Image (cartoon, rainbow over all chains, first blue to last red; front, side):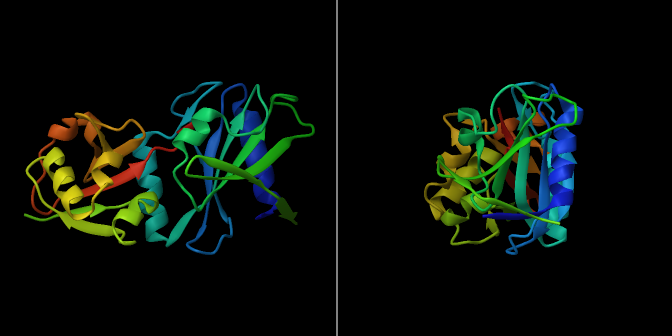
Length: 139
Length: 90
């Protein structure tokens, strides 16, 4: 199960809306081993694409160095789908390489960059196996 | 000649959980081969034939080796090599 504060959910959804129709991506870091997402880190989608996302390799190194210094790890790795459902694509599964992370998907297919209901789901992706999990949002 | 190699979470199964290991070699390819001799299987996760795997980023100090000479990049005593899986998808 993913336990997450409403404010962090809102941050992911508004990032996804702002970048629509391109995919948005980022990380929510937290203390290593805590399973508590705390620090919202929106990343630039170096692919700037409606069907693909990728952290820039330099940004990726800086991000991991910074988390390492703070004794943090990526608790949530999120990205948006802008024309399809909030479910991991085959590409998402083949790239997934943080077995301890919650992979959160936000779909903006219904409302685009506008306000409105959103679709947000969370998954574990381990060794190519996807399992959906409950998202418990706290105020 | 010792090079520090930082191992990402997903590859620590090959290093008994170690976050950092040391290795040696004149080039990145030699370093990977040497690492694989101590941690069998890790090489295959990094290299595919004569190329670095697409999903893996390798940095020499602060530079992505794709912007250097890839697997032919020279490494020297005191260098730090960082391995990070790409964060990407569709």
